[in-house]
Image (cartoon, rainbow, N blue to C red; front, side, top):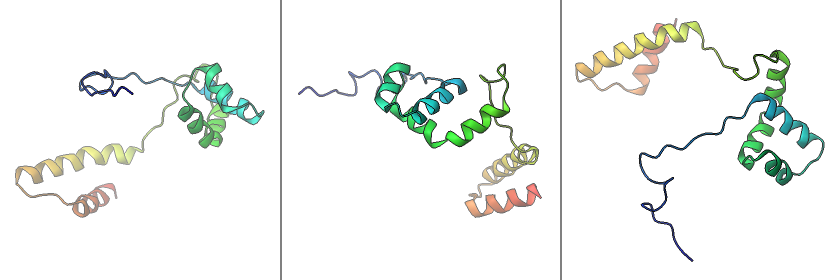
Length: 123
C-alpha cells in the first residue's frame, strides 16, 4: 500500500486553494424530491455528481429549503442571502473599537467583559 505524503498531495499543501461547489436552491429541491420519492442516495449522488455530505445537509435542512423555495421567485433563486440585524451592524464596529483600545492599553479583554460591553452597546 502506498502512503501519500503531505508534500506529494496538492490538497494538503499550504497555499493551495480548494474550490467549493456551489449548490443552487433548485438542485437542493431536486435532491429533496428524489429522496422523498424513494430513490437511493448513491443513485442521486452519481446522477447529480455531488458528494453524499451535501445530500445529507440538504435533507437535514429540508424544511428550511422548502420554505425558502416558496418565498423566492425564479429570478431570485440563485442569490439567496441572509440579512443581519441593524443593531448588530451598528454595535460591531463600536465593539471592535473598544477591544482595539483595550489592546493598545495592554489590558487583555476577557470573553465576559466583551459580552457585557456588547450587551451595553446593543441596548
